[in-house]
Image (cartoon, rainbow over all chains, first blue to last red; front, top):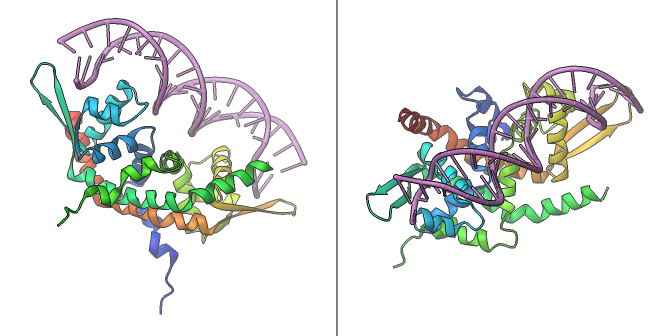
Length: 131
Length: 131
DNA sequence: CAGAATCCCTCAAGATACTG
DNA sequence: CAGTATCTTGAGGGATTCTG
């Protein structure tokens, strides 16, 4: 009987062997930036579709510049689509794609981990800082 | 019958309501930095315990400064422990904690998503950039 | 061997102002 | 309303040198 290897579970070697070994880190860098996760979660919370000003209100503290930039990146990655309505005043709506929604599930894994373990992380930090 | 709500699945409202609404983003910022994921995965690949120079070799391109800094952060967060052996020449070993190992599982969710969808992201980027 | 110290540079992000 | 343009700052990270 084979031992239930930790490596089989995570397979980090496969990550390093993959055709694009940086993909995972690239993803995490994107998702880990200042506003992306808040914009994505807010967009989902708003029903998966919202206009610029709605998102601006839904994400407290974000500037127009950063919201615009974040949405542009999300659109570029195919995670949201941008729809412009030829009206006056202008209306632009952003909607999550299937790809974007599919990213919500693994994100949930991190959310759950954080909920379960953040206090322990905080305690470790306090203990470390006490030295 | 209730509609199977997307919100119930992800519950972003709960994130915003949580006692520390920034925790998830903080975590993602940490994990999303330049070297953390490579160090964590390499440490796991090396059996969950390794010394400084082993990690240096296992993570191509990392400098001593960044490896030291990354390990210090991981130690501060309670994800690895640092053990110093009073020898000459000095020997220092780093070992993943249970908390650190527990983070590998949700990370795997992101790894899987990336494997499954990165090509589509790349295609979206190319299409976007073509404009 | 396992770092710490120092210097330098780039870029993410904030502040503010302007516009079709 | 939905952005863009410009300027500025601070933190992350690279290169190099030094040391217990």
